[in-house]
Image 1 (cartoon, rainbow, N blue to C red):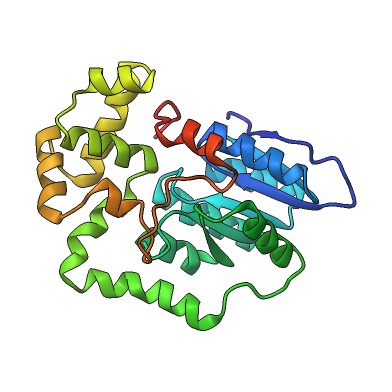
Image 2 (cartoon, rainbow, N blue to C red; image 1 turned 60 degrees about the horizontal axis):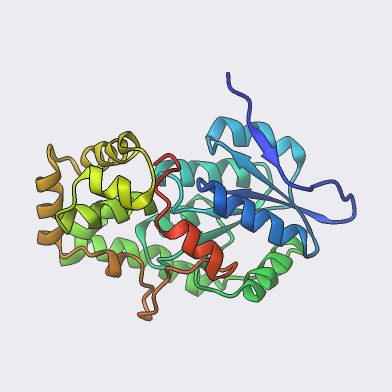
Amino acid sequence: MTRPTARGAGNSVDRERVLVVCGNLIIAETVTIALNQLTFSARFVVPVTVAHLEDLVDWRPVAALVDVESVDAPVAAKSIAVLCAAGVAVVALSGRRDSAVVARCLTAGATTVVDKGAPLSLLTEVMHRVTTGSPVLEQGERDRLVFSSAGRARTGDSRLAAFDILTTRERFVLAELMDGRVAEVIAAQSCVAVSTVRSQIKSILQKLGVNSQLAAAALARNAGWTLERAVRDPGGSASRHHPFGAAAGARATREFGASA
């Protein structure tokens, strides 16, 4: 069995321990460095699997920050459940506050949700409140977030729910396919191997239950799915930027190289 790799400072005994769970290596490193420069002792885990998280709870983190869109939705929900079962307070990081993925994470036990477009100061405040046991999400707001997804599934927007299981990178690839770009072009623009993009396209087709790239693009158009809609929060503000600054967001926005 491949052993997990946990990286970060994490040596100070007088700091609250925070585990960063993110499938994007660049973002994981950026978040960990930022937290360690503040008042936390942070580590990140690579790769993100449920088995590795079960091993790393022995580090006894007080809280975990989980980027729910950087890994497959089932893995995100299960990871949160494992962490919560170990007594770890979980903060979900998402660019789509009302998404079905966020609802599943809250149901799995996440303490609250922080938007990816939020400033670092807000995330720091939330993490401090979580590590000290202070309330961060009122029950009414939690219920709204959980049940808004169920309500959407009962309406004409239910067709969009199928796209919630796509990872962030897969959504960008799908948008490229809708624009008529082939794998070779996407790979060249993204500076990654063609095989990487093809692997992500294969995952998209499997998740959407279609057999071709044209069918995937057609399904997205017929459902009214767009990349812009996927990355916007209910208030209409774009959530493309990572909370740790424009540089990190720019490096990660089109980063297809990490595993889908």
